[in-house]
Amino acid sequence: MRAGRMTPGQQRGWDEGFPAFGLSVENGMLDWDAQFGEPARRVVEIGFGMGDSLIHMAQADPATHFIGVEVHRPGVGRLLSQLLTENIQNVRVYAEDAVEVFADCLAPDSLDAVHIFFPDPWHKKRHHKRRLIQPDWVRELTLRLKPAGYLHLATDWEPYAEHMFDVLEAEPALVNASGTPRTAVPRPDYRPLTKFEARGERLGHRVQDLVYLRRAP
Image 1 (tube, rainbow, N blue to C red):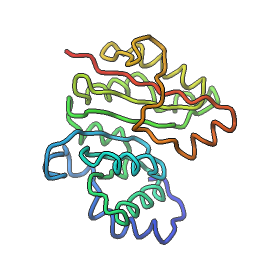
Image 2: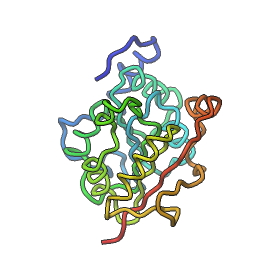
Image 3: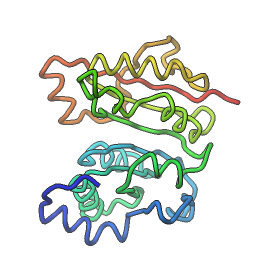
Image 4: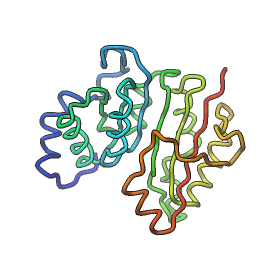
């Protein structure tokens, strides 16, 4: 977990929200239907930050079940506090490393979508190996998708977008949803315009949405 000073509301999220909405890698493979009480579409967001986009999507689509994965403790606390305040019932949270969550808790062919919005681009060349989007990791994500499920990445950093295209185009089980290789799609309606994105646009950063579908076997 990444530590950080928490507000009283964020601490309330941890104290009251995690027992209600929190999940643990220690509990092993997740039974979605048992966890949420009924079958539904399944979406995972990796690195939800302060939780703004996840809350927006969950409220806009109550028939879908969402799981957020984040290691930043204040962000997790804020999301949990909002779930309590807004009485949102279709979100669960892992406050753990996404690699462990996918390895131990999410079954192959089980997800309708994976979202990764604005991951850290690690600008310096010597840090590129720390970037989240790497071939082995994308392969793991792809294996968890159902056929025709999708992986949606968004970034406002052009060099990282090019790196993402390199990795995604090299994965044989994925196909670009735009119909054209190395082409972004218009921002889907389900992804809200975040404060982070608005700031990037003010700085002249072009936001790109990359959406790739898992091919049928």
